[in-house]
Image (cartoon, rainbow, N blue to C red; front, side, top):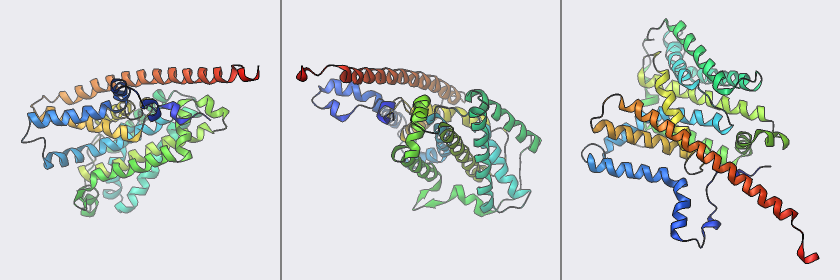
Length: 358
């Protein structure tokens, strides 16, 4: 079976031993460059905005605002790990935000039951997306874009284009307002989900199979891995994370809105693509995704506090997405070149004659 180490470009520590400092730095820049950029942005904005940026209040505000973006980026990451993309998440979170409120206000369902209902709905959308991709053989980009359009139409039909309002229990608001040991609960959600996904992807066979399917589906089939099973699983996990984000967003906003879809798709894509260029370059990974979300949060917050205009945020996201896709493509090509070099080296070592026997 294909080694997971060949899916990313992080250097082997053994390869760095005895190397000059300059070569070590050059090898580590692609791995930890985004981490360094994050630290630099924090230092720069702290110097420029000493009264507003390096404060506990600002940190708490950024964590709360970016928690949903972090969840959405993790949702995008899962199909990407399996070599697919899901563009339905933006309108998906809008639909589930509306349904989380509507099920309570219109149908009287307790929020404790709403959560599993919405999660099941998210899983269904994941199955639909995976079926279109794997069984109908539609390109993932087209299939999930079509699903997103249908979801948007259903939400508009259900709400008649109006906001969904009603009386919600105060206990429902605690899903976004509560604190755990003095820490706001909102950033705890993506952290817990990140830990679970990290353990699954890095240490469990199921995660390794997803990575192998995403890296080389033909090789995965030859090794007896049921590729469809793991692609369906990746889409289902994505749909459930989006559904959970919708519930938390409903607790935050308290009003169902049909205008949310576009605002969450782009930052999520940026987070997933940019995250694949750090820590494990050439491979989407959990902590790289969170670091990418942090870069977006720090950059946008700092610019806004410096007085940037309202259009700076979408411009920043768009430019960062283009850069991230470019870097992801570059690392992907480097990964392929590295794999080929390793295959040639292995082939040469096995075909060379044994001089000792001659």
